[in-house]
Length: 162
Length: 93
Ligand SMILES: [Zn+2]
Image (tube, rainbow over all chains, first blue to last red; front, top):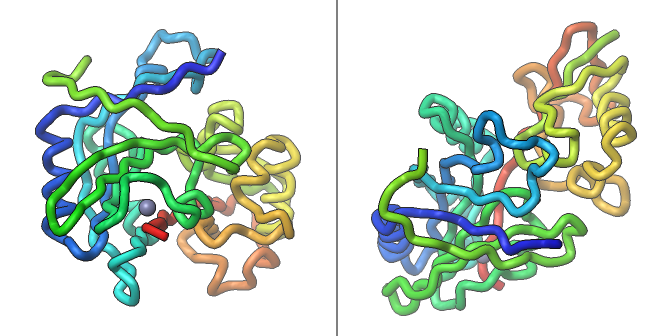
């Protein structure tokens, strides 16, 4: 049975994502989510991967939005930026487990454009920024059939699990 | 000739959790064909329904982007590494 995956993040990192969205308003902000999947902890049953993993965000890798032409409603992370984020993650014993971006003056719901460009497995955090003030923050994962995103619960944790 | 295909993290669950796979291939397209034959679930994440590489899928032979080579017809030689690297895009509306 499918269980809604849960993303753990500290209040401090969640606040940083909001602050990044406010800082770049009215443009979209973007960045990488660095962390670990509970399913990847050594000794855990690999056959359960990637079913209902619990994922923890341990660091952020803020990026510059490369869409100079339409930064208010688009963000873009180049493959070079992705490789740099992966390198930073590996150096800290983590993985890039997802991406965050803001929706200036729009709700924190994935757009059709988001879905058309999404990768599976990654967590996609969206923060809504209304009139410069960060509002709701949500997280999503693309379904295997690429037709829809499923919501992912966000749980604010004070301390990282080992 | 044997080439190694590096599989990006988000696609590993569809490739038996593997980070790479080796195939006999003379071109990039041939190697990707073998990859998506062995791991059929990868196909829709790499290719559109028309069979074209998706815009956010970047393929490198060693350190060269195949967009600046011969795209999927780029020849490969023994020991080459083909890397599939995501780019990320999104936005409102
Ligand atoms: Zn979006």
